[in-house]
Image (cartoon, rainbow, N blue to C red):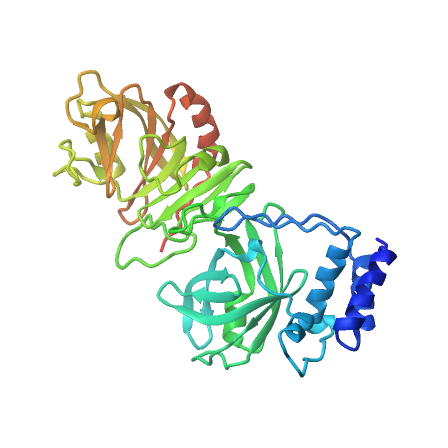
Length: 426
């Protein structure tokens, strides 16, 4: 790319009049960068609010002036407000170019790891970048707070501002980062004067691009294999985040829309874009695959409780469903999930059902309870898959559509994903 020399002359004159003494040298550095840097549109993965960063260099005074401002470290602006002893202009390799790109301003989840000075045992790992700050969450507390700046394309600097138990004030880490083509994964490498922060940061991470800011779901996914962070299909003992308690593989076009201790939800990206991001268990939700921990038979009186006297194994729950007169049930051929034979029930609401929850056309027959009632409404067809896990735990997988006419087509898309589910032991 060649610079517009008429514009260059204007900027050079401006800098000589009001800029630092070495303005010519700085401008030459800018022009060298513009001449040698490939100019391409950079679209970053959107953050919690819709935000797309696009950079398009043009032949014109605005582009050159902005680049000069970046290299000067805004010394011209400081001079205008009365600085009498301007800071020497840093060379480009010393610059911190400023706030993080939108693609980095997410939580990122990854494999648990031991952190020197924090825990010798692996701890849950969530990186959070927000504006110009970095935090590492262990699942119980946030540690390693740092300032974060971009020092070049794909280069990140983390700096400790306040000394703690693991890092000294002023410790710096210099890292390279890159995203997968679809933005679903982040890879970080580098070295750090603070060994704890280096152990925490280096690795491959899954991007949490959740539309619900109160959740750390993954959001839109590229084709690949993914892990949950909060869902716990084996809820025995104290709950803590457990990366990989559920793993699964999806083709292009899917999204993970919820990751809670009691449930995990997948839907198509088209459906995910249309749904209220905070809607859970809503009647109007689009087509979904829901994975629920510790299902119980639902009480038919619409109270938020389980039906008494019903066991929680897959066989006991299936027997109860098949004997419920409010439900029309078809037992389907079993499928294999995580190496285990799973019971498959296709369920609708029976004619004349009386134990209904909800009002009017939204009323449905209660079926399972998992912190809230699950129900099937008039005309519904839903697939329920019950899986016994080792140790006495049971998982319920539900495949549901808003429009019963699309059920068969959606089921065909959903089942390869369901059959990829794995539930590693604690």
